[in-house]
Length: 275
Image 1 (cartoon, helix red, strand yellow):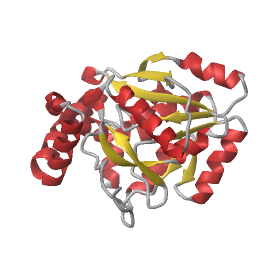
Image 2 (image 1 turned 45 degrees about the vertical axis):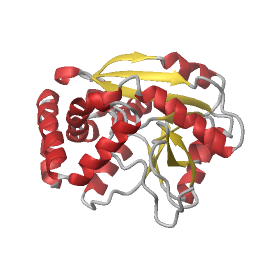
Image 3 (image 1 turned 90 degrees about the vertical axis):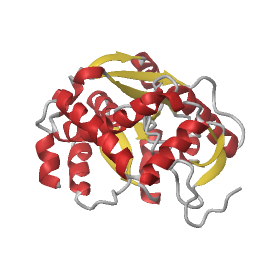
Image 4 (image 1 turned 60 degrees about the vertical axis):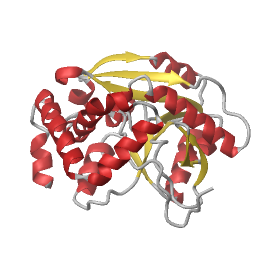
């Protein structure tokens, strides 16, 4: 599998996306669990009309990974066709404040950190994959260009240190956290166990910026977007986590077909009780 993954890095992006679309449909066809999660999540968001596109885009997101992780950084960055909102980043950097980039599972979420890393140091939280063979590939693809912080308390300390030093930090805020690391708040109208780490990191005074990379048709590259929060975070921890979920919802609705709707976002982690 590792060799195949490395070989795919040399396949043209347009062909990878075509193969990825096919893979997306095969996954949907042969995985009842995936079909169920996809249907439920789209129903919750009232976006059932985008199901066909969402299935294909999920496959594209998987097969483009070798190209993003294993090709030279300059080549990867050159695939970005347009960047919007980078001035928000420059304003925060000029003020000497840390920057917390929040990237949901939307579009090509791997390329956002690669672009940021080409401009400034960034530390990204990293969780070991379930497939052991993927670990070295991820370490090579991500670790060669930015700092990786493990998904534990030592990693959290690294993130805090980076923000306090005025550096950038990146994370996926829509991942389901473990027991004791989340709160039950709405996400697309249904209660979801939601991480509190992003809201806690914002307490450092860091500027929170939402970002995603829209996948363009026919392997033409990506459009990259950076957006500020619509309003400052306020209230207690649960309220701030709910605010961030609402911000993510609005972001996802800008490019809904490219969100990973098959992700089990509403699962109940082991040891966690439903509200």
